[in-house]
Length: 283
Ligand SMILES: C[S@@+](CC[C@H](N)C(=O)[O-])C[C@H]1O[C@@H](n2cnc3c(N)ncnc32)[C@H](O)[C@@H]1O
Image 1 (spheres, rainbow, N blue to C red):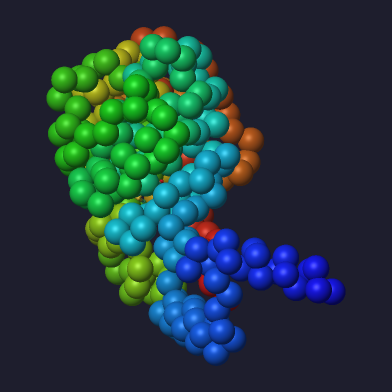
Image 2: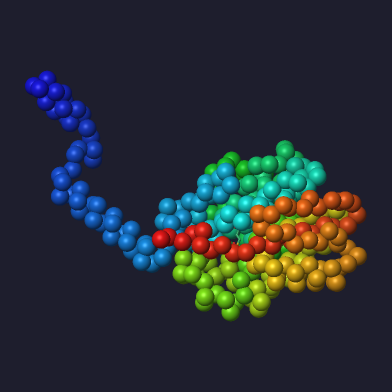
């Protein structure tokens, strides 16, 4: 008894001031402060990912903060599609509207020594966070981050890209007020607002594709669901019938068709997805 009391006194003497046991009242006060803070986050409907500063996405822990979109589980499938393109490992890829850089980092990790990803975004916060994630995974040699609007930062890469990946803003402007608070109050409008019918950026991307892709190139983008995908497939088939082939809408988490016969033409694959905002609800 005596021996253990003196041992405890000895250990206490070795502890630096900040590690000394706090009086109970002090601990209770700290707990109350933490609980109040937590309740405020819940009341403000702040996504948990912004509170902790990370999101688990594929096998990555992606840094996020307000001002950058939290990457969604359904977007993970886009990376698998890239992995099915013949020779993708050695190609140059662009991730347009990279946000946190999740797609760019995941694709870069699958590439060989010659492969590169050019990740662009118009948001300075996104550029900062994407840089952080690229560094977190040591991908600085494989991912080049460029600031600017869609194809603008890729002038020097015209006709050189093996593929373009994009999860652009695609929510119709008129639907924004109806988004659940975790999304509408906290996630950046710049990442969500797709303009009229949600198609503004998607159409712009379609228009610019042929100038950046090399022959036989591949394109995959995410949409708001059936209606948008069907419209875009029709639009592309009608407008560029002779330039593109294998234009397809692919269902989220369904069997993804491998785009075959990558020869002269450019292949487009439209990934269709339903938004599953409930994935980030704090309840
Ligand atoms: C739906 S978020 C996707 C983010 C990320 N790729 C992901 O899947 O988590 C759309 C991204 O497009 C970016 N964006 C919006 N307008 C843009 C533009 N004109 N040029 C480039 N990026 C833009 C937003 O800042 C945002 O990061």
